[in-house]
Image 1 (cartoon, rainbow, N blue to C red):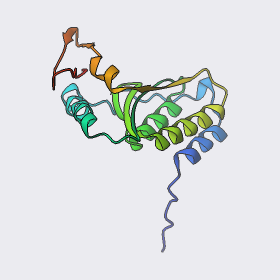
Image 2 (image 1 turned 30 degrees about the horizontal axis):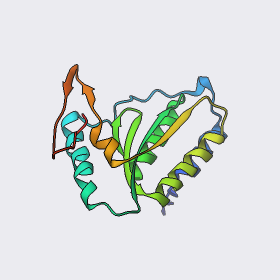
Image 3 (image 1 turned 30 degrees about the vertical axis):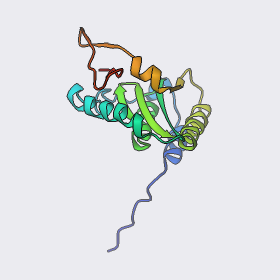
Image 4 (image 1 turned 90 degrees about the horizontal axis):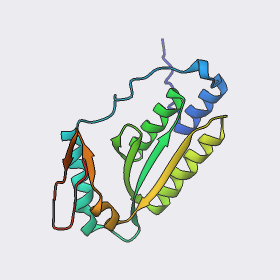
Amino acid sequence: MSTKKKKKLSFYEKIVMITKAGLGDNDLIRVPMSYELLSLEERLPIVDKVLKGFRKRKIDVMYAFIMYDIENDKVRTHISKYLIKQGCTRVQKSVFLAEFKRKKYLEIHKTLKEINAMYDNHDSIFFIPIGEDILNSMKIVGLNVDFDLVTDPGNTLFI
């Protein structure tokens, strides 16, 4: 007896299937929001690596924050998995820090724009390119404690 291999669907094909199935407020599936959020101790080395990479950065590499407010749990889960698969680092539940070439930045933007146009929604996705100077001067407050961790002179590691 032979078994058929299930065709692996692309991100776009998955969203098309979800759209065909009908996205409505009553169709929401509750998925725990924190299932892919790493602990603070696991996120710090990743962010530190990004900051240290500034000196080795090539001219066509850029940094950006991608943030979203997506109502539908199913769509939100697929988009977060897509961003992680594209190399983005989850900083908070709906905020990602990404380091990629401009071509990939535009590709991700185009894909998510197409997905957003596929169904009636009140969602928003922000793509915020960020310069090295802004990222280095950023200060973050977390865990009810002000936290500044200096990795190199002039660099601030956000937590």
